[in-house]
Length: 453
Image (cartoon, rainbow, N blue to C red):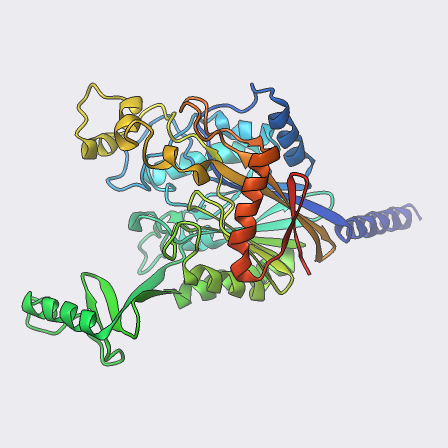
């Protein structure tokens, strides 16, 4: 009798949990977090209100574009730009702010090699964050990782299309260990040239002997592409007007979407997130392959597609009643207050051993008059907060944030809720960038609302 009562109780608990999963479930989604300073000391009302919003969501996500270590290893010869490193204690600051899940696949994953990646994984895990996108093999890097909540189970699949080649995870073959690294989405780019430009470039290649290898065999051409050639590792194709075409690697797409399909059977909600700098003419316009891949991921079962990487807001597309957020820009952008930088960062600017991080910043950004400090859009973003009612998206709210454009470098980079004229400006930027996708965004007060159906 006692066993029967216990069984009935467990069934009732399971049924209650299932009903909870069918109710409202809210997410807080943010873009790149380049964190080099603590968050917890600050007390501004606009900051604390934002933190409470993140904490109040059932799940909160950010892209962790940072490595945590104490310089135990050497830097790699190639990085994602600035070599990223933060104090390991900062992982707990993300938990303090309310975050539950982080993506790890991005162009800084391998700045300090495999050891830097491994130590970051350790500190992120010890802080209690669910992380996806890296692993000791390609299979592990591709894996979905899961967050358990009292309302629903959430899967996260993290991918990067922007990375140095050594950062991509690999497979084992012939008893050779696999390469640790990030979950890659490779792509190809073809430049389209009008006939006269095409023929001139081909003639240049021929005159330099670039269509013949050292053994006298032809290279850079293909019978399957008679109106195209490959020069300096790049394909060129004859067309009516100049342009470019990008296509995701079909094998990568197939493997990633197989993971998406599996995750959808094991979780209530599946988030696919990509770190993609690739643009189409301007920073705020994503390359074509990103949209093609995003739609394929939703076809495979993703409930949300979230982009980051270009350090600017990109538009939002509703596809089959599911949001594709092409880029959430920056949530934290503290790349100017790193503790140390390796020689590889100083050398291109002719800086000697007496130069330090502030000197590097001055040289790189010409005293703040060019590059990131001079671009307003780098320092303006939104927090996206979708609410699901069971499997249906009920609302997608957009809360504008400012990272302090124009403030000194020791101040800017930390987010606060934007208000008034600045909030309207940020939201209107997103309205314009979403129009090409047919997306409607209504602004009420200082909040934007995407028409989800």
